[in-house]
Amino acid sequence: MAKKATIVLFSGNLDKAYAAFIIAGGAAAAGMDVTIFVTFWGLNLLKKGGFDKAPLSQMNMGGLGRWMIKRMMKKANVLPLDKMYKDLRELGVKVWPCDMTLGVMSIKKEDLIDDIDGIAGVGSYINEAKDSEITLFI
Amino acid sequence: MAKKATIVLFSGNLDKAYAAFIIAGGAAAAGMDVTIFVTFWGLNLLKKGGFDKAPLSQMNMGGLGRWMIKRMMKKANVLPLDKMYKDLRELGVKVWPCDMTLGVMSIKKEDLIDDIDGIAGVGSYINEAKDSEITLFI
Amino acid sequence: MAKKATIVLFSGNLDKAYAAFIIAGGAAAAGMDVTIFVTFWGLNLLKKGGFDKAPLSQMNMGGLGRWMIKRMMKKANVLPLDKMYKDLRELGVKVWPCDMTLGVMSIKKEDLIDDIDGIAGVGSYINEAKDSEITLFI
Image (cartoon, rainbow over all chains, first blue to last red; front, side, top):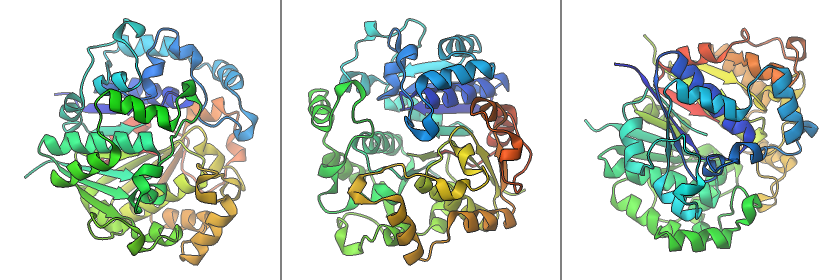
């Protein structure tokens, strides 16, 4: 049976989403069974057009803005977030938007992109995480 | 023997505390043995009245302020943080304030709420975490 | 075989670096095999002089500035970050700067301190994390 990695994606920030997706992709490429449980601000990423609007977690650090990071990502041959997400899905990474926080953030299911799995509760997350080798909160 | 979940609660923010408590509650409800090791800014939550003063991690994101989040939590039938904490304790979740960072933050034991377990060092945290299926840093 | 702890150090903040180093030190002292995979803003810490420049994650919280935290750390007999790092290395903690994000952040290998292990990709991180008892994202 494949080893499991379960990531809570709490952050809606561009840099943290990149970190989450790179780790998820690496785990899936290594044959792991990967689930991303998306909650709170992370849900903004899953809204239609959300990948393009993601802010940076560290606005002023070293003068690096969102535009700059995107340019540097491109220069370093890192895929844009939406393309990376598509690859993750093709690798079989499961993406579960969190039921309770959709309600809290007043986000409706029809606001979300289509390429997600079913909406899930914390119980489903725990059920997956308790058998996972890698558990992260990002 | 019950599976274990061990959470480091580093953040003192309202939204991250909610995430930590919801995950801890879900894990405890699933029969796991849950410990929250509270350190740095997280210790502010455990001060008397601290749950009411917790700031948001993402002040300006989408115009959602602390007051708004609280209203939305209520609308989505999510318990206030202090009631959620009480439920966690009734479910047997252990809460360990971190010894070293209490000193760093100049917080005295008598500043803390009564409903906590003993103050613990990083060694106790590691001892718990090394046998845990779920380990998170929030 | 020793149990393993694998920490992703994404943050470049003083307080989060302290948390990462204290946990890494505690795990190493307990006989665990510890690896810190340093990525994104965390790479700024590994630049020459980087430990001294690290900002706080929560600037205004309770009026605690960077200078204040450093003074409080000293008062609480907590080692400065650079000395703590030296101790970690003597305890055998592995430090792997992330290949891809070095490129993204335009940091060259010669900008980094000497006392690190080889530069590593996400595949190496996953390989270590999938056999780890403790996995954290800080």
